Amino acid sequence: MYIAIPLLAVIGLVLSQVYQRLLRKRMPALLKRDWKNQHVYLIQYPRCRTLPNFSPWSLKLETWFRIAGIPFTNINNEFTKFSAKGQVPFVELNGRQIADSNIIIATLRQEFGKTDLEPTDPKEQSVARAFTALAEEHLTWAMLALRSNSKNGLAFPASDDGWGRHFGTGLKKSLIKFIMGRANKKLITGRANAQGMGRHTPDELHAFAKEDLKSISSFLGEKPYFGGDRPTTLDATMFGHLAPLVYIPTPEGILTKIITVTYPNLGQFVDRIKEK
Amino acid sequence: ALSILHTLSSVLSAITCAVYREKKSKQHFPRMLLLKRDWTRNHVYLFTYPRCRRIPNISPWSLKMETWLRLARIPYTAIATFSKGKSIKSSLPFVEVNGRQMADSAIIIETLKVEFGKSLDHSLSSDEVSRCRAITALVEEQMTPCLMVLLLPDVEYLVSDEAWGPHLGRGLTGWFRRRRMERRMRRQIASSVDIRGAGRHSYAELTDLIKEALDALSTLLGDRPYFTGASSSTIDATVFGHVACLVYAPTPDGVLTDYVRITRPTIGKFIERMKETFWPDWEEACRTRNMNTHRNP
Picture (tube, rainbow over the protein chains, first blue to last red):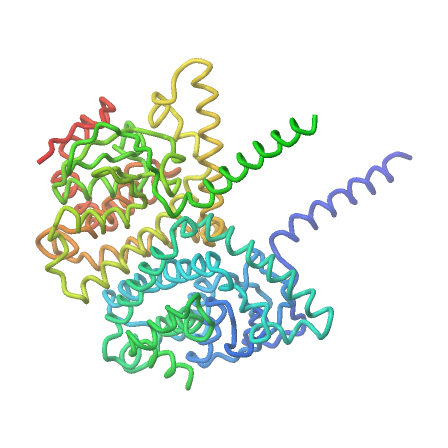
């Protein structure tokens, strides 16, 4: 009888810890506690100067929200907050966290009923999916591998045009810039190598990127948007991945030139979406 | 004593310089030392993984490469190897042709098309070319990494007797080699998929992604015999290489195999058709583990 109470207390303590640990893994703490109903909270990297966002996936997501007309609020993640999957961008909606930009788009499309943003023809849907894969997985990784290979291709995020403004001033700023530049380069190089693109030479990567841009340009043709007359999800994706190539200086400026000069319809497409 | 130190330091610095230079130029200059010394002219030597029991080659890119060589009617000899370190990009498959080594299937295909003067994709319009490129990206960069994540818990299958086990040896040495290979494969696959984001999805999300990719493929194929109409081209080899691995290599619950065979019979029939046309020696190759059961043109 005398050991029952402390035993129960111990068991209760252990169970509560286990419960907390398990639950903490499943339900990450929300960043925005006082959330409004049916309002999306988008957590992404802070703003840059020449480009709203450095990450293609964040840019794609935010462009999609603007095209779809979904009310959203941007929240700065201070480089420290990541989703349950360890990724950025992610959203919080109605008390739930959704990660991975493609899953977010699919879920929010259903929730807000924005089915008019997809081509209705299944063949066009398949083609859209294929081109999404081309831009997202092939072109962007080729670009990242190129940047990590070249000397100052990865200098943008830490520079003044990028996130420099957020670092404060003076010594703290230079220190953060220095450390972040190095760490960023190592991170991106490691990622490119693991992904597989990092093992190609810069010439081969340029060839890949050029062929990809050629394909995308040929697919766009003379249409104002990828979906025809109205922007669709594919337009958001393409803009998200092409705009960094235009607005962030690429190694030797080759890719930027390719987009604006060799395939002017791509450059015009980027400008058109930007205006909107 | 000082002179010894001097000699030692110069020797060490020479070694370090040599090693550093070797590492640095590894990517930009191809290896001078070929693996196949007595090569025949205009004959491709394909270095790839050994044969398995259910599928000639368990790596999608290697299967795609071999299918393409058969499709393009290029004479080749397949050589089984595990050592990626010998190729310039440290990747399999790689080829040696006319005294030069090339790696990465996409680059190999483009180069061999020019070198052997194959008019395989010449009749395609620029629209179709761009579409084929997009389909290639969908299959290679989105679908197959998801498949890899699904197969990651079953890496033991790769070194089992059905797959590469017999090639890794028997007895105690074999056991050690198998464990080492298993660890190596697991590390490599895990790092590659984790970076892409595919490694972070849940099982349901992965199967959904693969199913959507298969849907897209079957829609794009339609009722044509091949992706580009009546005659086969590079994109067919690509899709076959990746989807055949999905169908024939066992997934934990056979969900995806059923999906291909039953729910999306278009793609299932396409795989069968490619198999009949370009791999009539499938059973023989798998049973005898012979690398060269094909007949060269």
